[in-house]
Amino acid sequence: MSTPEFVEPDIEAMTAALDAESQKLDEQGGSLAWGIFRRGGPARTVNADVPYRIASMTKSFTAAAIGFLAADGLDLDTPFGVLLPELADTAIADRTCRQALTMSTGFTKDDPWADRMEAMTPAELTAWLHRGAIACAPADTGYEYSNLGYALLGMVAEAVTGRTFIELVSTEVFEPLGLTRTGFDHTDFPDLASGFRVDLDGGLHLAELTGPGVFSPIGGVISTVDDIGAWMDTHLAALEHLDTYTPGAWSRILADDQQPRRTMELQTSDHHSETLSYGYGLETRLDTRFGRVVCHSGGYPGYGSHMRWFPDLGLSIVVLGNTTYYPAQRVVQDSLDLGWAAATGRQATRLERRTTSVPVPRFPAAQAQTDTVLAAANLVNDFDDAVAEAIFSTNMDLDEPRDERRERFARWRAEKQIDRPVTGADLTMVSPLRGVVTVPYTGDSAVTGTAEAKATITVGLNHLGEVQAITLSS
Image (cartoon, rainbow, N blue to C red; front, side, top):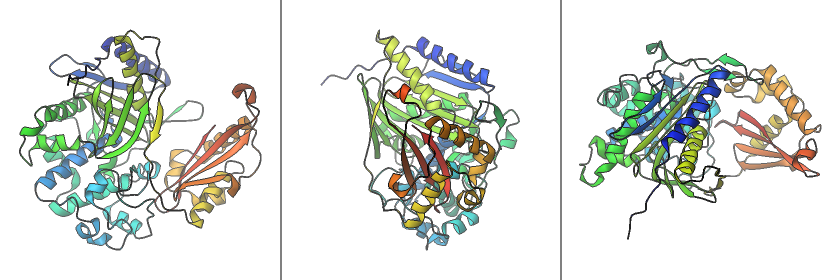
């Protein structure tokens, strides 16, 4: 059987795309750092030594540290309630390190809330879990991206070593690999690129910097393009001789992290397909154009990031931006698509992806969760401070000041010409902690070309059933 010939994307086209994105962010008042690396060849970089918060790309370092401990005897299949007895009576006590590593604990996506919780202490997280954290699905039944499991991995690391998580990762991962511009504490980086929140009209506001704590394992790392380039290269090297490594060797650990373990979704276009899976702290893909792909994104208040490497091409790319949830994955993906189009003579082709997610069985929602989602959705029509105070999670007013939230709701409501309260008939609970309200509207029928279109209000709840996000779309 012949080996498939994968496409080498055109680096000039990729560079032009990244330069254009850099200019757009510069004009907005932010800054972009990026790098394209070839194994054994020259790199192309911009702002390569400027530190940024890399957010959830941190999970690759957390997984590596847990792999180090597993090589030293940590059983990844021992329940959290055994490794951390203080969690014995919580809903997550029967979940394991392996399930946390692969995003299969059944505890749901919790980015808006978790991204604000970095400085929480282990004792505070333990008390929080004892208040009644809610799982959305049984363990090992599907992919559910969750930061909570990675926070607990940090607690496990501290329990089994007697060392702080940050000291463990710094001495066992950063230092041996020479990542001298990588760390957790923003006070160690006086030249850290400032992070910004973008308001309704595109204005920038300095984002609050958080300090290290129990949620640092989910997204607390600060690094540079150059250091992430070295991190990606180390992973590429680990895959080159996969079958020759001894158990417990660093290359074995990093190679294991890059193996697909939990299927996420299938993406297709008229020109390609990609199968997406999650490994240990890394997402893996199989792309019909480029072969094997390993990547991870990061989003945080003030920052957005994405790293991606191609074992069959010896190529890697990283993008770091400094606005809240900067769409670095989209920027990387677009640059690669343009590089592919240029390399194959299809310069006018733009890939339109279709996504099919792997089904996940979920528990039914309780009445209290349904009521909270409906109350949150009705804030769009009639914002009531007393209701917001009762149902909002800590992150909500930090993510968007209440006056701006009112204005955003009012603009959307006027655009869609929606002026009625929503009811249970409009609501679909897709999980115990996520509901979608669908409302017919006629506000832009001239644009849509239809007499009636559908607008949606999506409400996400955190693990205690508090509102962590209200998203509007059409």
